[in-house]
Image 1 (cartoon, rainbow, N blue to C red):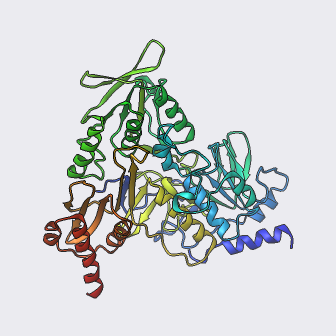
Image 2 (spheres, one colour):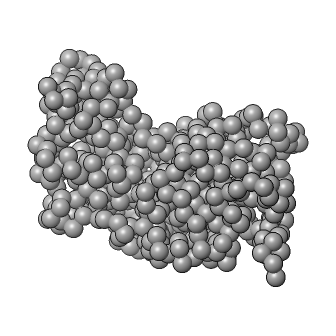
Image 3 (cartoon, helix red, strand yellow):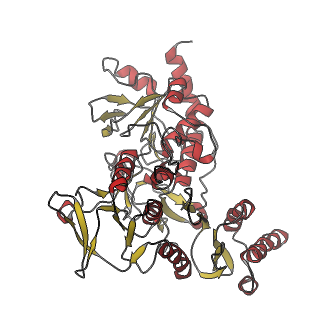
Length: 511
């Protein structure tokens, strides 16, 4: 069988027959916005997205350009991005037998895809406390899968282009150009570019030596090098990055201050009660808080190294290392002409991660997708969604009758896990943080919060639960059972409250 016939068969196989709210979940009502690509696609008025995925014929396109030279000859599928989503997508192609000689990944990263959450957790452990390092956390070890080292990609016949970000896309010619000048051909394109860290402007000191942003291994390496020489660390931002970096700094025994504009830590998710419990623990371990503060500028010493943070109220906090964790922006360039969602950011996709341009998909942090169970559009910056969206997208691309993506929002954090830590912290949240709250427990060691809206349990948070208790949380959040609020409030312990919640599942099943 000729290679052209095999590619044509692969093309046939992979053509599907059918196609408020806080947290790190940026949401809007389900009203897909029009975009410039509508002029190309011109979908029917009843559907923003076409009902079938008309992936263009790669073989025919390649044949018509036979005189051109492509850096990725014979690659039907191209993934742009080198993070979690790219790694899990590659694994799914392999599982379907359509990776070898058919898939290439082009990335600005110097490394094969890895589990990015490690960068603000175990990677920052003090050097004598077994910090994480590659190849230890390549995908897909974060979900219990096989470690996909660079050799794995070679063995699977997956072509990798490292440190060569895509700079342009020609939708009509189905080609990509890279920073080095490579011309890549695609039949199906999966955009998995993730996010970039939000930065302070240069004019207020955002680029000073000693000022750090964390998004990749190089960023984390630079921060570790600074921590080795630091005495005073200021972390700007009271979200996930801020809390995780500050916990690591405690392990280094550094003078640590967290500054943020909100009233309490992780205001998108934590209730004041929850935040107070975590803030107290951090303070007991030497971390200082400056709340409700705005940054005027970062100041440098005579060597051009950061020396202090000046607040708008005029106060100055000394620092020789500053870590800025103020959020992230979806990395849509150079794909911003494909169709963006102006409310939540990112590239608009449907429930199969198809953009409005046939043959182009977007997954992970960069995708604005329908959050089916809550009937709104969301963009989720979280590793769990990166994994699941990648797997779902590739299955939808390669097989028929794949159901619509039905994601249950999930967030977690793990801090103070290094050897000698005063206490390991690990919480999980599932669902939606809307409605009234019932909070049980005293953080010794457990605490739980239940969100109840119109009598239904919509979201649940648990700190330091057992494996069985953590397994209960997604069942509760997805089922959204009617729950007896008074009985929940009267629970004498977290364990009893979870028993009340679990019983509500059975009542709903019997109804």
